[in-house]
Image 1 (cartoon, rainbow, N blue to C red):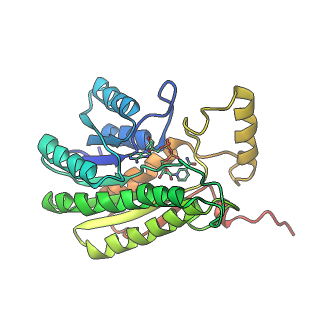
Image 2 (cartoon, rainbow, N blue to C red):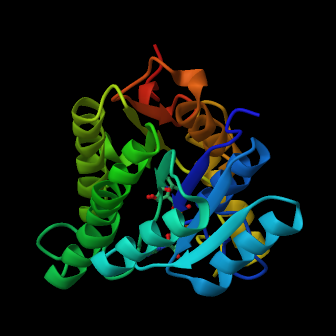
Length: 266
Ligand SMILES: NC(=O)c1ccc[n+]([C@@H]2O[C@H](COP(=O)([O-])OP(=O)(O)OC[C@H]3O[C@@H](n4cnc5c(N)ncnc54)[C@H](O)[C@@H]3O)[C@@H](O)[C@H]2O)c1
């Protein structure tokens, strides 16, 4: 029970589309509960966010759901207030919410300014807002951890996909500044996943298309498969708990070795 007696808050923790398929945030919430934490589930998607909390409570865990648009300061403040009211403390903040809305598969010239601003405001500023309003409660609770879900895209970029990697590179810097400014009471680290299989990105594909798509991506990874949401949740648990007690300010790549590999052979 690595999180026994702890309160964790996970943004972007709604289950995925359709029947509540896998998402990274919900897998993190379930992992936290399985290790004894009480969990505040946060998401803009009320229906699926409620589903995450219902599933936790059904399995005997303690959880509340708070609907929140991370781009709205008032919503973020409300989440922290509700956390304090319900559980009295906060020990672990996991920033995971991200938007893929808008015309963002474009270079900087072609990305519409409103879509650029939206992605910055949700994917980067959402992490900043939860840090700004959540850290004081963590300090009041005796200290704890912040885990930011970043991306391998912080280090290696795809052609014509410009704003998303910019937010992830900035999240890595945000991680390091929090790690230095709030040590020793708070440790802050980031996880940079490669491709992770989630329900939301599978939504519009047929079974056949899905298989071909995932097989194609799997081939580009040294482990010849893509990452599962549980494999990310395991690393979050490690960074959130005392198991990682001397790790601070790190951005850990979890991509099965893809970013250190080279397709070139001698
Ligand atoms: N899936 C991958 O391959 C992958 C790879 C690297 C990093 N990531 C990161 O993992 C995290 C989880 O994303 P995911 O890919 O699992 O997608 P996802 O769509 O399953 O999760 C994102 C969640 O954020 C929520 N959200 C979107 N806008 C919001 C807002 N304004 N306020 C509050 N919640 C909002 C969504 O409703 C959703 O539940 C993200 O930070 C993403 O960048 C994902």
